[in-house]
Image (cartoon, rainbow, N blue to C red):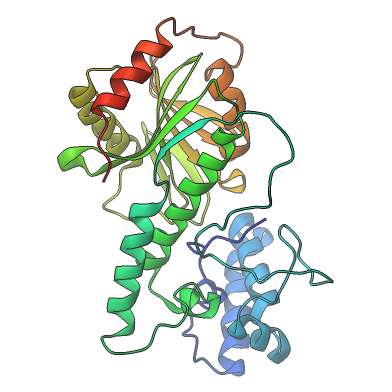
Length: 313
């Protein structure tokens, strides 16, 4: 699984700077191990995060590997081997020539493009004017950047991953990405298919999230973000511009970051749903109820109207 740039670094988990000595690391680990151990009243998830952090920087050898950045590896693999390719958070490259004839979904706009531009701008500003930035996606550089910059890159990757999933659903689906939502910013995606019209937000906060009192919360969500309310406002702005109503609102997150897999926020048949990315194909094909399919009889009319009215950021 591709690591998230938004995840806390081992140094952040241990609560020490990246320049800390090995003795400082050991002291921080021992202190937090006592504080987070489940048998001593701590949190199981926090204890697991601490153990993972220690595995990454707990020995001089492991720390040196981490500080250099991820080694060359096969996509989806944790080990290097023959025919490996460099790990990168850079923009996706065209894949090999397709041999199948299956039509893919129509894709309009540039998924992840706005956030990649914002990331590059923030990264250049953070590095400093006049300082060479040979590879803005170098892992050691990304990991050393402030969390707010890493979060922007994580969102770009999440948007690209969502569109990759939709693309494989076939010609019956159309997706518009980075849609202009006026003063509310942008709507990550509009997805149109036989089961409905979906307003979709793709996010990766680098940590577990949960639904609490009608909103999505988590340690990685910035204090100025309200994902459910933000998506509602963005969808409303786009609906006002296009005069097309959405069937559902979806917030798509990495699989490991959401325990329930699929959960509705609030009440009502047409509300906001939070879901793991692996569940997205079923939700788009059959609706969030996964079996109570909502038929959209005027797909062609809706697609034409969106083509004429959607603006991109």
